[in-house]
Image 1: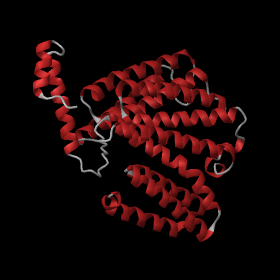
Image 2: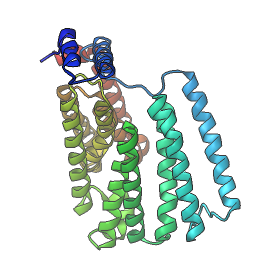
Image 3: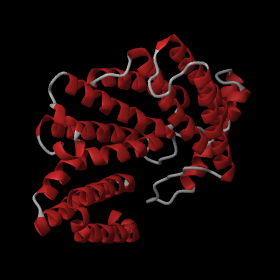
Image 4: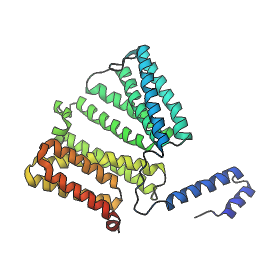
Length: 329
């Protein structure tokens, strides 16, 4: 049900909402209407920066962050092996500074590229904090550090709602699962060879299940914002980027390991299935991420012997890009 201007004026007269709240609600609904009208039915919004000023700010932030890290080392922070109270305090101080900066550039200025840069800097700083608290060791320590990173990044996302941060959280969760199960003995020492071993055994199962879980979360966010005008849609975009390689990895490696033209043809057929799914959910990001990862795998497994598969994959992507609208209909 839509509220008309008369409804809002009546609500103000009754004291249900204030005049200022009524004006904010009108401005909010108008902004959403403009955003919906500016999108074609098949468009998938993707913006990394809204102007060169954002790039300018990012360069400044990177230089500032690098300079601060240099100053922190003068106060006793060992970037390669952080440990001790000094490192913890400096990491916490850095996180506070990043949060203060994000409050301006993300919450007030609504800048996209600086928000992504600040999310990455927060990730790096939380890693330093984790290693300073836990120490550098084996898989168990990496798992605990990954959990710390996931918690910090979840807090960052909860406050600032930067969609890109969701991908970083997913990566930290995957690292925690992988390292934790390795420390528990579920995965052997060969688990470190991710591209080699992940097509067999429990690691492959974990990878696929993780990918499906991330995909399900992305779909839930997509369905909650069908017009793709809120941060939920942006968050879903980055989760699809993470989910596709995790799902594709195990199947693609098995197909590629079968060797020859048959293996490459099977990979192309599998990616056609992924393409159909991407068309149904209207997410090019899911297909591009999966196909791009498959190209990397093909190049890694076959070196120069996967030229035909890569050629066909490229052709398929170009054709899909040109005919996406018609296929969606």
